[in-house]
Length: 431
Image (cartoon, rainbow, N blue to C red):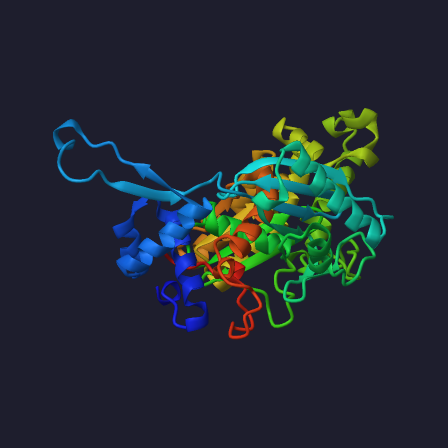
């Protein structure tokens, strides 16, 4: 609760403002008195802050219609809530093979998006040109002027240095240490925040998804590669060198298939999108009656992860064997994480598990078979609340936390007296 009140005079107004906004976001609509009670702010402070937020369109009033018998008794109460249409934020998900830019409202609801391929031979300058072009096209499609946009949240599926605003590297691309934040800010004149996609997805689950109010979370994202985000006491744990969460490079098969990291038998070789296809192809080659041969005119080289799951859903034995092997390897790793960390919740995201029940059901079974006998506790394994929109919502949430709901909204972010690391996208203030 102390983080909501503020104790450092140069930033006290910013902290108080953030406390009001986050209280209304999580608990609104509320009357002014209740906002003051929850934030420990005085009535005069609430009056001043709410007045400013109303003027800026971030908050709106909702008159409450009184019942007939109370219609003439006292003033009708007025509730406050976040004005979802009071502005916009943008998100940019930079995957290994696709670029997706998204526009959303002040509750991180997706209003529209554009998706385009991200070719391996694209230069760093070409990538930046493409990103800026896609953002401008999206804004034009939705007739949104730049002055209605609070900022951009960039969430690459690779390594970042959020402090310096760098995209350090991205799978399948040779780029290194791109000053993405500075370049985008210079080209668009908008505030820009950057964070690894899986950590931004964990943030989205904590703020707008199924993990609201929980203290610890493990989010596992299954895509081109496998990563996880660890949230402990409502803070993302990144490790001393920013490398925590590289779940895909945990070795699960001795002398297994070669991995891009140089080792063999990494989880990526089994449970990533590429790993699923590799295993399913091997199963289909020894089962000529498999329906996997019916996809792409029998060309197994064109098989996709979604093809495999569809075949498994339809009862194909070869596809189901592949899925069980994947669920076993991934489930053992998830179970070990649960036994070590004892998180409140484990959220699995990515189209691989969201597309069907073929993988999630056996995955849940494997995890429970390991965790329950050891601890007597349920695994609390859940699918992401956002489905395929997870990466899109993540970028919007990063922008909202960085430029709307964080204290940085009121005063310049380069205030000399600020703490050196006031990255509130890593902190969830309890309202």
